[in-house]
Image (cartoon, rainbow, N blue to C red; front, side, top):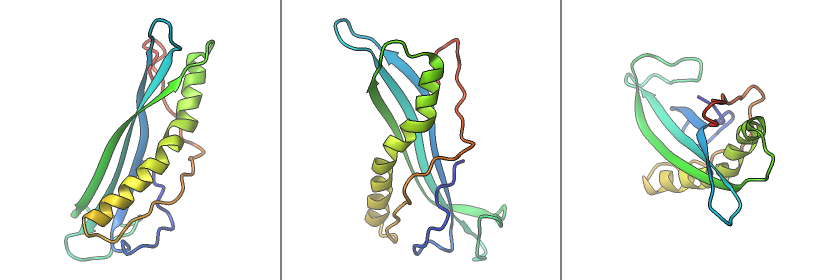
Length: 145
């Protein structure tokens, strides 16, 4: 799970927020007479947890009896034109650095609008900051991230 919510200071302080942002796989799409396309599939999600006993939770203190209060999830398919000569390593590098970054503004708006529509305090996610140690695994035989 990737946590991009550090320093968030909305009226969600009594909840532990977890955020998922990951590229799950990719595929190449070829059509005759057109440039090749790379399609990346990503899962995004956010979850609020609350202690059943009304104890305040924190990122360091997550009791086993904490329950999910709310969860928002979305799946994205992002299509890019493929440049000739890209290796699988190039695709992996692009996926690990760019795909979630490009999706993030849409995800951010979606979470904000959904929390507001649910009558919750509006949650505005911070700007995306890639994690230094974030890596994607690639299945070199299948050509998928």
